[in-house]
Image 1 (cartoon, rainbow, N blue to C red):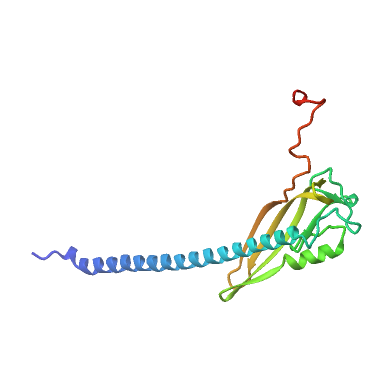
Image 2: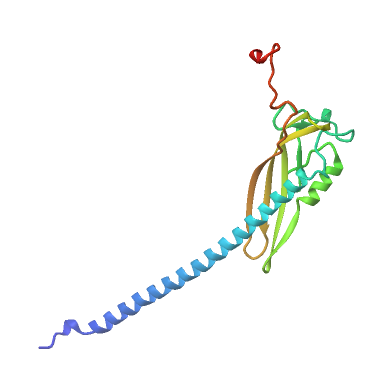
Length: 204
């Protein structure tokens, strides 16, 4: 018996199947493309982060380098130029800042130190076909000065906040900013001394 209402069902099912397979193929292509871009983005962000961390190390090396000297020591950089009773430490009423970071102005009593830090905390690294740039700023949060045994020069203990920016400029840009605290430890001469009000161990 012929059923006219079933004519073309096979063709219709074939078209539906082709449509479903086309959608699945397009989805797989989109997924593969998304994974490719995700991997590229992750690689670029990782490289930018490594660049920013390189900026932190460059700034830390400059600040802790004995040849650089420390704020508040010597006639050219006296401690009287700083207000160490506030945090962050200020000079001329403004926070003490060393910077090569765009948008962050440097404020330091000695201009040669500002120039030297700007040069030391700026750099470009090679990462394959890309170039990773970094710039850094340092803010002096606290500073104390005291004499240490065997040293006739005042010893300076400081706490700096470092902020570094790493970026890759290209078809797909990447930018990362990281920060860290840098503290210089120092032990005063009588740090472990015992004080008493009289002679004998019982007075301690």
